[in-house]
Length: 452
Figure 1: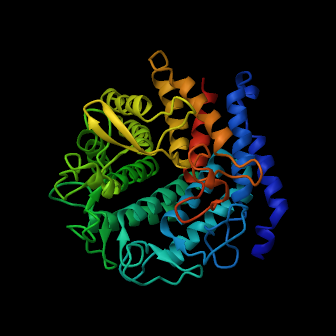
Figure 2: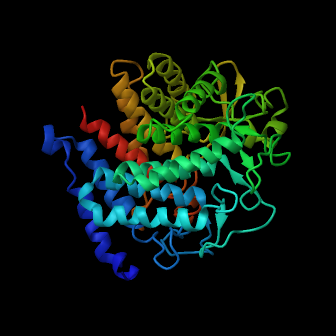
């Protein structure tokens, strides 16, 4: 079939919007719900119609990543495993939520799965390449995306494949996801200290002391997304050998080792999970090492949700995880929430036992998306608790609607305009900015609202 007809421009977009809008709403099921309806319309008109089919590369396979502020394609369109897999997850999830879109989202998801299998999987050594060209040629060089495979990238590939398999019942793709898990576990798992090494050589040999002096061997971001990926694979294929034990291990590591008693995550670690810390250094030294040691409010609220999801998948008593997660959510609200304008700041430094100095006042799109969903989830789990999590979810949406959604060109800015007005003309898409955080948050928040 001619791909130009499959992905053909405006007609595809028009059908896509219609399919989202005609999803069963709470108004149709159990009475009106203005918040859910608002999110549903925004998902369709502010997000999806701008990304799909525009992001589908009908010429070379996979998905395009780079778009200017007005959605003009830009740059070489290299293909990063994280972005490609996240688009697979998003389109598969949309198909699962909207089965009447079988000929659209399922096809878009399958399109991405084919690229992962044929172009990004390393048939010689196993595992997924980190970066290929638009045409699928493996990129070379000494950088972290060209000289290594990453646990983070493998995690998102597993996540996307597992979601596709669950949404479509495709047993072959599920076996591919299990094969990817086995490769990762065989090569990157640390049998002595638990968890997974962040970087691997192309042949799968792990960098046990870190890729270079700036990259410690373990970190929270890889770990929480491995937790996320293993949770989804376990839901789809609970009989996968070794998977349940690894999922349980990651849950305990995340909840009991990486999370501090104040309710924040440490970000980077030595092999034995000793945290990399500059908290006793001068402010100048701390600023110089910000990337390695700060409080990331967006990651804290996201991790609270991912831990709960993992505990429930495992059938564990939710209370220990809910207790830690609540501490994380409350800490983010107490120290990272902008009381004047709304939204979560990007980061701060611990300066006293219960005091945080905000040092990055920007408000990234992904952190607000994660906050929206996590606050809505906590409103469902702890409806009578203080603070009023439901009110915070609505306040987060007001911030997003006012300062993150582009009313002229559509899509979400990279940062809220109150602290980063330059985001108005910044790129709408890149290898680290697609639809994963935003679509996931909106879909899950809508689902929570529809169950009330």
